[in-house]
Image (cartoon, rainbow, N blue to C red; front, side):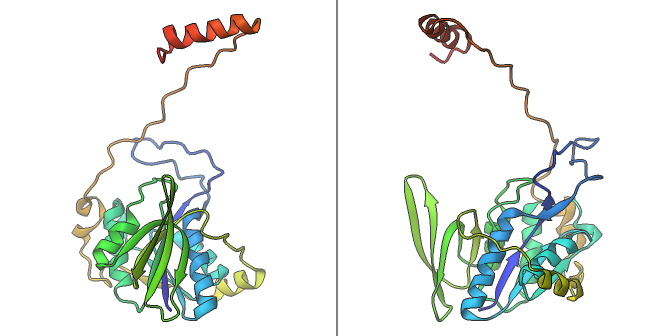
Length: 263
């Protein structure tokens, strides 16, 4: 079974982010980037299916030149090839426009399954996977924690956590699934894999190659628009109540009733 994995490059999770001047983006001048962590679960699951049933794993990303680093990291894990869509007109695209671009790439491939991370940790939108399924006209299940594909590659059983239990779904393939923590444990790239990935070609595509006009994406073609980024409000400083236990309890109850007004 051939599997397509859509990935995104995001700022390293260990970094402290700052809002850039103008309030429309984060300050990116001194950032380092990694594969979106949820996308790593998608890559790992694709590799496990490939090792079990054969086929190839194709990585697809839409973004600037620096995305090549993320694609090579995925190739080092064991993916077979990578496609990178880059074009100046993509700048400012919202998640729906990005899903539209991805759909144009995926529709030109032979595949039995499309995997995406459940969300990108920088915007937490969770839109791209479901929107991609809609553009492709495929069934989709989000935030899966288990995936079992049939031997004939025509169906799959997936598990997803819901409030109070686990939902088990049987669906036909091809389909779009989004992955989350708990599905698997992503592997580390081997030294051999990293050396091999450095030499592997990455197929580059522009919007024109995909038959997409510049007015269909970017800010002009997006359905949503970012108004402003702001920091969360500062939390008020906590208080430590001291004294004997009965006195502390009485004071705590008074604070909750009269100051916090939660009683």
